Structures are given as structure tokens and as C-alpha cells.
Length: 390
Image 1 (cartoon, rainbow, N blue to C red):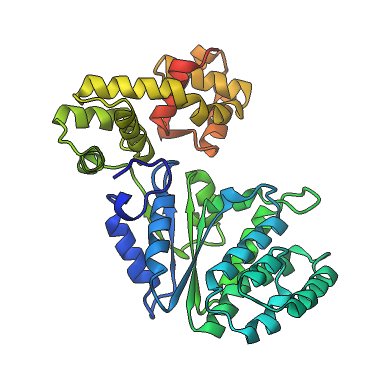
Image 2 (image 1 turned 120 degrees about the horizontal axis):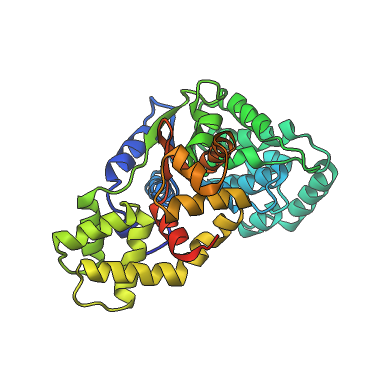
């Protein structure tokens, strides 16, 4: 079985079976219409869980799953979001659409890609011409509430027309906050409120969300002031425990590992699935026969040196210069206390507190206790220590 740095599904899926079983049982129940919110740090496997649930639900005759990642958006406008999600919903339902429905309702869809979609399901050219005229006349000048109504009421109408309930899996949902109108105005909070209002009318559609940055997930869905407060079954996605680390590595490597080697892999990666795949791929690539703690460390350091820049450079360089300085001092001097970081970085406590707050909102560090902070991602910390100079 190959190691993969893509979302793991099927045979590659390990450890999260209990969460997947609960999600599938709930989302297929006729008596429950409630979605899930997956909360966890980046590279923890949330997308893999969504992909596995999507794969299982795709086999259900009365369920139509739709997977959509907000990280796939390039322009990050509400128009692009509506257009892309609409197309994903139509693509999911394409085998169930009746010609009656296509004629009656698809004219309203705000998606230029609709024409290619309809051609795939053999709609006649005359119908396409009528749709194209309609969209060109009606597709411009629509306000944001109208666009969101068209997009998020579409799965409900399709579910009613086809008899197949819709489950929408919105990966990296907090990115909604970054959506803008065509004039560049930030409208994310209004979009979230509108989606929540539409959700109240659902009888055949369920939304599930995931998010990597706890602060942003709280703002968009989990805090008492959020429009989606108590609207989801919340699941915290945590790192792998030791047994899962052993299973993942031994299953893919095809060899038994010593307790010391497994503990080393766990310590290097903090049990984060992406980095375990990272180490495993390196062990296969370098064809190490004797996999002991020393081998684990050597492979990890080699890969961090070779590929760490691809993983982390953009993230690090997107931060402000003083934020980068703070992280450099924390990593290189193993600092966690507020006063220690202040002395090393040359910042006053008040100024440093502000920058630490920024870094927490960006999901880079977390406050462990009053005046104590640590990196969310220990491998990112290791890369800074090894590769970054002040």
C-alpha cells in the first residue's frame, strides 16, 4: 500500500473509522437532519475524513453527497463561490436529473459552466441556446443574497425533485470569511449569516463543515455569538496515538518496527498523519533496510531539508517581519514564556502580546496557559530552527 500526501481514502484510511461510522449513520438517518463540524489543526486528516464519508455516501441510493473545498477558490469572490459550488451540486446530481427539471429550473442557475455540464448529459443544442440567452440577460447585476439563495436552495430543490437527500461537505469552511464582492469589499460575515438563514428552511439537505484554525472556526460556527452556534455535531480531530502510528507505518512499509522506532516517529511528527506519510514515503524512497530510531531521524531531517521549503516557505513569508522574528526566537531558543520571548525579540510585553494574538488567529501558535505559548505544528517549528535566519 503506498504512502500518500493526498487525502487518504479506502485502504489508505486509518484510525478515524469510528468518526466515519458515526457520521455515515447520522447523515443517512431519516430522523436526523444535523451535520458535523470537524475541528483540528492543519494536516490532521479532516479532508481525508470528508473524502471517506463522501465515498461511502456515494454508494447510498437515497443520498447525494457533494464535496467542496473553499481552498479551491482562486478569486475568492462570492460570485466565484456561488458558481463553483453550483457546478459541484449539479455534477453530483447529474445522473438523477430529469429533462423536466433541466428545462424548468436550471435556467436560474448562476453558472457559466452550466453549458459544458448540460452537454455532458446530452441536452439538445436548442435548449442550450435558450439557457445561454437567459443567463446572459439575467446573470449580471444579481446581488449577493440572490446569488446565495440560488446556490444554497438548489440542493433542496434537487432533493425534492429526485427523492435523494443532499449532504454538502464544505472543507475549510472558515475561508468564507475571506470572500469579497466584485468591488473588493469584504462580505464574509454577511455570507455566513445568509447561509445560516437558508439552512433553516432545509428539510432534505444537510451541511457539514471543517476548519483548521480554531479561532476562525469559533467565529464562524462554534462560539455562542456565531450564526451556526449549536447547529453541528462537533468533532475534534486529534493527532494519531501510538497504536495508529504503528499501524500506518507497518501496514505501508510491510515490516515490523521496534517500539523505539515507533516512539521516534511519534515524537518527530507529534502524531500528525501528513508527516507520518512524509516519513514513510522517505523510508521507501531511500530503501532503508534497518529502520531504527537513527534511521527515522536521518530520513526526517533529509526530507525536511529537501522539501521543507516547499511546505513552509510561503506560509512563513506571508507573515509580517516582526511576526517572523518572534517565531524565529521561539523556535531557535525553545522559548514559550511571554517574558522570555519579549527579551529575545526585543519587543515590549504589550507589543509582543499583540503579535502573539495575530499568530494565534492565523493558527500558527496556541496559548497553553497564562503567559505560555507553543507552536501548533512542531514540524513547522523544526523547519524554522533548521532553515530560517533572522
